[in-house]
Image (cartoon, rainbow, N blue to C red; front, side, top):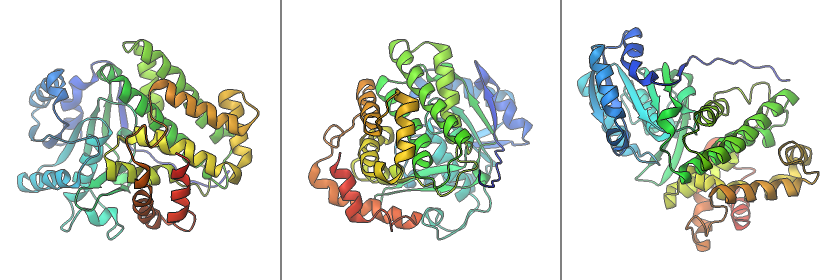
Length: 381
């Protein structure tokens, strides 16, 4: 096992009706004003908005609002939020929604403390050193954004979907009530499941050192995701399955699984970001397309771990059969696994590869993922 430092400052408030206390949690952090960030209106339809406002009012928290955050969150909307925070001198950001809302909240929190263009942080032109506090109430389990410092934003001017990562934007408190996630559609349940698995397997397969314990954690996460997804497809109101799904989603990307590993990277996410950027594909749906294709391309580079995956997850001795079984499971739950199924034309592969290679360069893995290699991977989709 490699040396490591593990630190996660986020407090999780997990369980039924915890959202009623969001004003209390914010007040306990000595915050008196927030920017309330949410999506395209579902929280107003289902009554959550009213609960949040009542809690903020009860504890004397003043607020401004930023709505309209979409599933591939836009830089332009982040900039709108930054402007409100600065003009109104707000002290914190409260994201109520899924990963896209929380990612937007984090980017706003960083930009609120910066005099330049917040995009500078996404292209490594500036380094994050401070941010205003972030709080969250989650309505979707997938990204683990409620317990990490990651934010992925789409630049709607350049069609670049890039990310930042810093512990300074780890939420102070995140409310996770599985009941708030019961209305998630079957499509987005499937996309969420794929996303959680993607978070788990990236380092699992690409690390040059991956301790046995770390592998077992990843395998447990994947098995739990698969089991609970199938339960929830049949019975969306199964609280226990929903709760396990929500909690395991957090474990997949809160810094736990890569602890003690060495040399891992995130090629599936790197390639998928181009699908979302150019064709506005839902992130999890895009990963459903990329993962099997990438696994087929990468299998020979880490045969031991691929064989382990096949055995531990599907009880198969042949690593290729493990890949096939995972791909079949994606199809079973309703996730696309081909470019055609995701509505992406084959003649778009070159453009996707060029876009993805730009991100590979930013992440320092363009020596492996050249434009031609990415084309080769996408051809397998």
